[in-house]
Length: 384
Image (cartoon, rainbow, N blue to C red; front, side, top):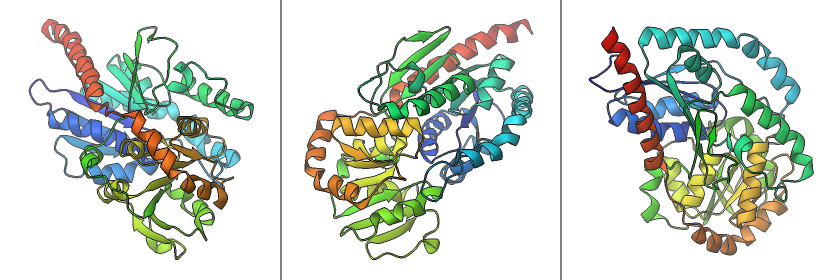
């Protein structure tokens, strides 16, 4: 990877659970590549395959697999904490080895800047090697947001404590921490130590933004869940008198149902159906929630049991009156039917949100940090 002129060499890592990280990261990486910055992308798990396909043949970009933590689920969609813990022990135990490999990579290839989307190893390596870095995610809202005691029920407090602990302990902060969310949080402070905290709206992919003026409402409901949870949704949809279009990793392996049409995952076709559907049923990640609401689609979220970030998204959707939610292991047909009966009200409330794409604001913050990194590096080069 050769540096071109004054352009930067950037190393960019992404969390490995859920395709939302891939969608969000793709748009930032695409724009960096267009400016001739050289970008090495590091990720794995559910994020790797869709991102590899999206970045295929993109000039100035390469991608490598990175070890990372993975959740293990029960058949009903709830996280199996015992299996998750035991299977991730080796990765946790050898975490320092991964950090050391990244430190060596940074030194050997002379990276100027690092960006992390809720991935724990690269920030530690970047901090150790003294290169500037920033984080872009929505998870940091958990520790920076002013808590709304009326929003989250007491039963979710243990999940909140665990989530806050993971975010605080495992993800070091850089020069800037960008919190991107369609439901902008009210944060406690704008600066923590040397880190500036910036709250912005959602990151919307170019493929979705271009469909904004082509939105229509056909007679089907779009369904998505991460691959390990696809089959957990089927009992909830069975027998409902609606047309469902469900994107899955392998349509041939899915149980046939009269009311469900399966389609293979596609980063180009999915946005088109998102623009055409009348509503969305999905996992409760930030990215698809944002894109659905941006295109004016009511959404029913299915948070993973015990995942505070996703439960929080569910509460925000319900509070705003733009959809509803139920934890995936507790969802029943009646919850979906209640949601579909309320689409008229949800549509009216979505129109009031006036959601804007924040990608321009985010790229401005990145460019500012790249300029600062270049200015800090220049005196060292002059002395050399």
